[in-house]
Image (cartoon, rainbow, N blue to C red; front, side):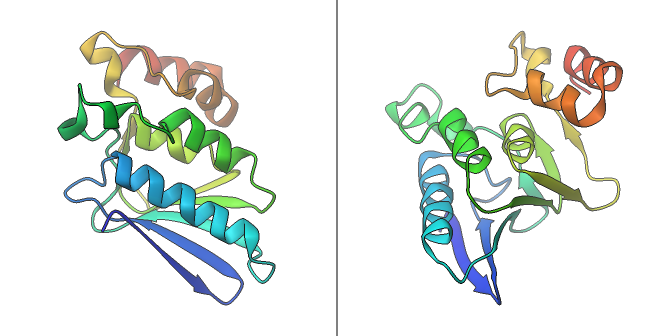
Length: 157
């Protein structure tokens, strides 16, 4: 399983379930996209919550798919973030554990975010000489302010 869908009252809950870190592989991205579409199509659903199974929200890209066609197949991460941003219903990232790289960018694409105390969040791509590629450099300053976000972005911490 890569992402499950459940409705609790009027809230749809999409749970990323791709152990060990809920990497955003193709099947997980597709499961999230299907869940968001399903929730948007259901008049009884009033809000969409995205969370992770286990100890992580999402560790970002699924390294098992690097260099394969699945890594860039639709929905890619940016398309998925746009789907969340453009949802007609509120989207909430319930950050229950680690949110790194694309996982943090996914959470930033939601309308709201709530995080458990002391969960690690970062855009660590810079440590590999990469710039966050799914809008984190634009969305993070809007959420945290320019100074804090810039320090996170350039340090990877």
